Length: 501
Image (cartoon, rainbow, N blue to C red; front, side):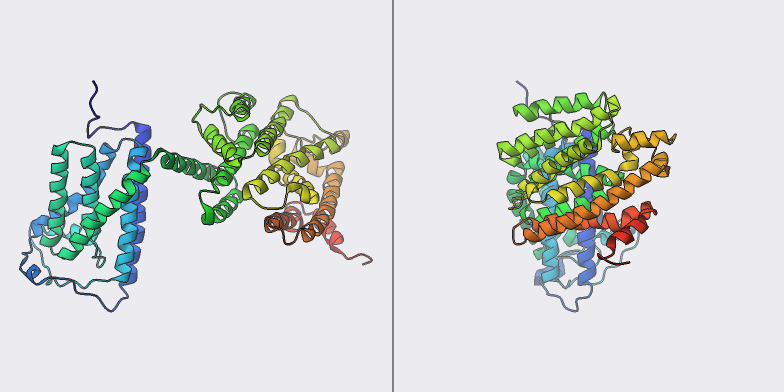
C-alpha cells in the first residue's frame, strides 16, 4: 500500500514556474495593498487605543525579531509543500483574502499603539531594523503577520501528521508571541489575526479546492495568457481584451464563454495565418481540432482543446455549435488558399468574407444574449469584410494570402508588377484604382449601415453594433487615409454633400 505523499518535496520545473509565479504575484499584490493602505492611513489624525493594562509589563526583547522575520521563510516553504498549482491556489487565495479584509479594517479602525519608544543597539539591531521596516508605520488590527503564520500552520498541518501540526503550530505561536515581545502589536491585534486566519482558511480551503473551481480558474488563466500573446502581436488586441473584461465584470461566470470563444477562434486564426508557430502543418492541427468539435468527445487538455470545449459547451445551442464548426472550416480556407496559391474573383472573395463575419458576429451576438442578429445588419457585415481586407492587406500578402480580386491581380501583372508584393500593388495603377473604388464602396456600406442601425434602435445589442460601426468609420476616415495618402482626396470628395462643387 502506498502511503500519503511526503510533506516536503521538490516540484517539477514547469510546476515550480507556476507556483513561483503565484507566490510572486501575491507578494506584489500584498505590497500594493498593504503599502497603499499604510500611505492612506498616514493622513489620519486619530486612532483608537486597544491596549490592555497588563501589556505595559510585557518586556521588550529585540532578539525575538529573528522569530518575527522567520514568517517569510514559513511562507516560502509553501513552494515545497504545495507542489502543483492546484494545491497552491487555496493557500494563495486565503492570503489574498486576508490582505483585503485586513486592509478594510486598517482603513475603518486605525489603531494608536501604546508601546514606549524602542531603541535597539548591538547584535540584534540589524534584524530588528528589518522587522520594523517590514511593518511600515501603521496597519495593526488585525495582525496580518499572525494571520499569515497561522494560515500556513493550518494549511501545512492538514498535509502532515500530528508532528507536523504540532511543529507548525508552535512556529506560528512563536511568531505571534514575537509580535508582542518586540512591541509591534497589541494582544487584540494578535487575537484578531489568528481568528482571521481560522475563519478565512475554513471559508476558502473547501471552496477553492473544488475541481470545478480549479478548472474555471485554469480556463481564465489560459484566456489571460492568450490575450497577452495577441496584444503583444498588435495593440488593438489589448483594447479588445480590456473591452472584453469590462463587458464580463457584471456577470463573470456567465460571460466565460465569451472570453473562451474569442481566445479560441483567434488562436485558430493565428495558427492558420502562421502568427502562432506550431509543429507540423496548420491544416492538420485544425483538422484534429475539428473532430472533437463535431463529435463532442474532448480528450486533449491542450490550450486550444480546453478553450474550444468551454466555448462550445457554453453556446448551449446546437445551431450555434454548428455555426462555430462552420466558422472554423471557413477560416481553414485561407490556409488552403495560401498552400494552393488560389486567387478568388471579386464576388467570391466578398462572399468568403461575408460568410466569415456573418458567422463570427452572429456567434458574438448569440453569446451576448442580445436581441439583434447578424442578419439584421448586412451592410455592417460587408463593411467588416472591407475593413479586415484593407487593414491587414500588407500582412496577408507577406504570408502569401492574396485578398485582392483575381481580376485586379491580373491587371497589376500586365503592368509588369507583382500583386503579391504590397509595394508593387500600391504602386500600380490597377492596385490604386481598386483601393480607391473599395474606399468608395465602404462609404456606401457605412451609410447603409447607419440606416440599418437606426432601424434597430431600442433592441438590445444595437450599442455593440454601433461600437463596431464607429471603429470601421474611424478606420475609413482616419487610419487608412493616413496609411495611404492618395485616399485623402477621395475621402474629401466622398464627404461632400450632394450638389457641392
